[in-house]
Image 1 (cartoon, helix red, strand yellow):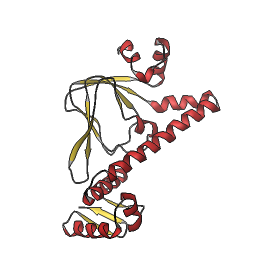
Image 2 (cartoon, helix red, strand yellow):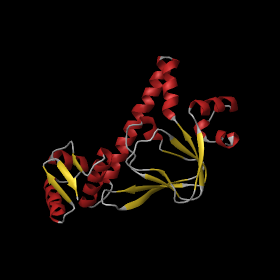
Image 3 (tube, rainbow, N blue to C red):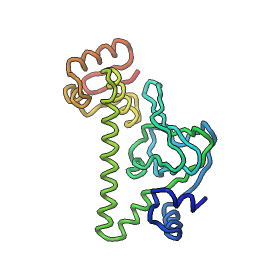
Image 4 (cartoon, rainbow, N blue to C red):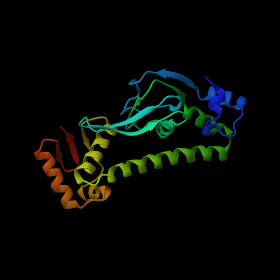
Length: 216
């Protein structure tokens, strides 16, 4: 791997070459090549490593439970992806990461670094804990933005139910909200939500009873 190129990344700002070599060793850094179209990370699975693009780019593709997909972002050379999930480790990834071009990616096990932080004293431990808390809050905020960004009510419902299906790893699942709470979470009117859910059930998209849903 090209250490001088890696050192220039803002992720390693203020870290000298010797420190970088030790850091990469502790993070069990591995650089891997991918061909265009290769799947780097699969949606629905937790990840233990974040990726740093050292060459080329990847696309972040979001799939819903009905098989529809769209590109959320393109991550190019010098950028990172998967950092939030790598910090949390247990959260299933909500996107597929696909090589947009032939590329090289440096994978870092961030939790290995955070585990070492615990040995450095309470202040550093607190900083590591804070990073984990911020990662969780960032993920929750991103999810909420995804839910309320679509203007159409059905799109918000599809986004929410798809997320629940992927995160729980099954097509039949229970959500944590009653109907009013679900409406509040999606920032929609409860009556309109109930009516749209009924239409979706009649159209054969979903089946539900109270807060239990099945994607058909």
